[in-house]
Length: 111
Picture 1: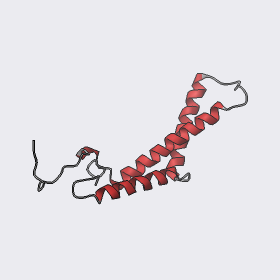
Picture 2: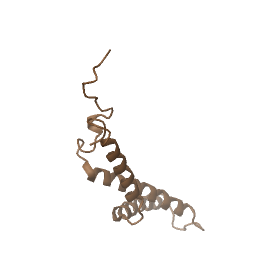
Picture 3: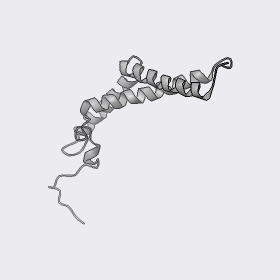
Picture 4: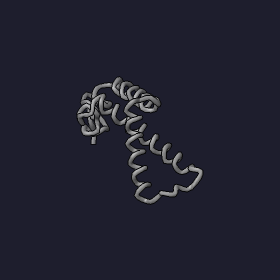
């Protein structure tokens, strides 16, 4: 199968995966970066919970589940404030990649 060089090259990225076409835009990248930061913070909080010095006398599986849910909500809140800087770094890195791939030519990158 041969193609002429005058035909435009189609992007290897499916249209649904591009942020603008998927309805995400710049805000979608921001939300994804914040979600990534929240995951990191949840893992950090879980590690801190495991490092407790003694046993909880009122501890039960229900209490553990509640603490996990509270920690997840706290991590989401902290990530939305963007105080740790993880989300900002991830967002800046991906914005630079998107800009660089968009400069490669027409149809060759995420829009």
